[in-house]
Length: 449
Ligand code: S3P
Image 1 (cartoon, protein in one colour):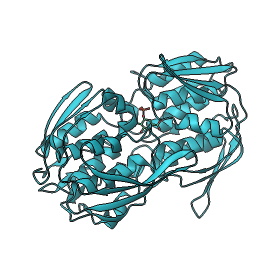
Image 2 (cartoon, protein in one colour):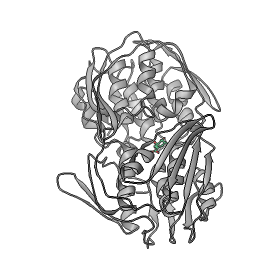
Image 3 (tube, protein in one colour):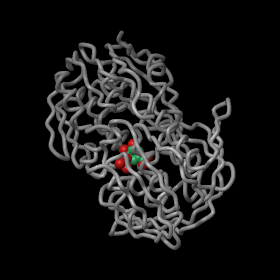
Image 4 (tube, helix red, strand yellow):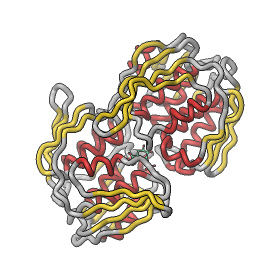
């Protein structure tokens, strides 16, 4: 939903060792896609482990507005009765995607090749984010978009009546753009081809194959070439959503920096297009291990074990790894503050167009808490002070960005003075049980009166 209630100021205090098991909610990316692909199938898709964060609930509401039936059983199982590829009805209300760039961009793609018109809006954060990256390729299919200046929401999309298939090279590393083009390609006759120079998360490709679409992926000198046959009949699926590595990052990083910690985080999806943070942390010297590695529902899964790591070292993060950890840089920068030496992060321009400008939001907050940060258009460097020497004591702005809020709350567990965030409300978009989960591990995070 657009906007949320009054700001919820929260403070985290230096905590004793975190201990126990952290049961992480379902993966946000896979949850959105389960609802959208379920809505585009004919028959009942059954989803367990769906993330019930606000972003995903907004996508569920949107799918109802386009004519799918979406219901939740008392035990948390979700059932989607889809309308089939090309079967979307025209919504009679504005589609409000709240805080979710993934929700709005994927849904725009999914409706752009059907003869319906829809108007999209979001909260103050989403309405600042660039949409031309999606509407440019959707125009090639024949869809028209009219939005605010700079290609911002609110925006109306008039779906193509006679869509054409498209061959499109994604100009920025973005799974949302790639997925919007593939979802639009579903209702275009013939082959839609998407080329990406840097491999981004591939859940859409994996799930489209699972729903019965003909889709192939080829790694070539030109990049990754994804070819989709248009106008398939998608068959409903039973989906067990793996747990979100991007949410697991918070208790994992909290354990690494908090003295005496030993935390187990079971069943985490470790798709290689998502797991870059954990490799990076290991390179920094983190005591982080994968236990019980296995495959579930076509995705690699493991239990993560993270223990306090007093001797972390700053490293240069390989830029080619950026796409596989793009959402994790804010919390990585917090771990970097507790490492010895500089952590250098390059090739990360995309961080500037997330729910907030994440380089700016983190740099300002880290500096206020006594950490030296340098930054440029597509890079930043965090100069760590080592364990036990991070001052803290500041109030940080979360800028309607769940990951900024959670990152600073993790930081305050190990700083010398408490760290406050001005608004923890946005955490509910992706990790609604963050507060009780962190409390169960022994983290001292409190709402301020
Ligand atoms: C997502 C893709 C990424 C990521 C977002 C989820 C997805 O965005 O930041 O949280 O589910 O496709 P971009 O595609 O803009 O990189």
